[in-house]
Image 1 (spheres, helix red, strand yellow):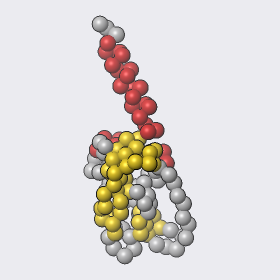
Image 2 (cartoon, helix red, strand yellow; image 1 turned 135 degrees about the vertical axis):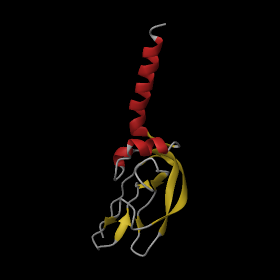
Image 3 (cartoon, one colour; image 1 turned 180 degrees about the vertical axis):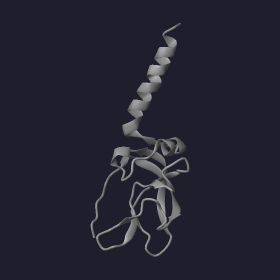
Image 4 (cartoon, helix red, strand yellow; image 1 turned 90 degrees about the vertical axis):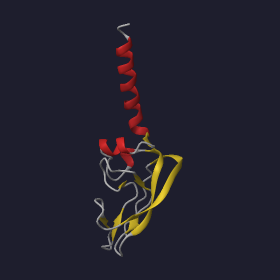
Length: 120
């Protein structure tokens, strides 16, 4: 079996809740032994406006639905995740923050507030 650990956590503190996941998930992968799994760092349940969190660990789904921890609050690194979260998913997950994206977000909001104040 090919096991690879990728650290996508930007902080040791996070809040996660258990959710059910199965082989119908959009990000199902197959390992070297032919077993199906959903990798840690998958936007759950879908990578769109319905997103509620990010899976904390790999979960094998060959034998039907399984429980997996889903991060609902915390700081993550989007560039370390197996699939980059979509803009809609990022917007939907209001209590998840992406450290590698926050600098560009902060600078654009600073620029717009600076620009709007420059006429006064």
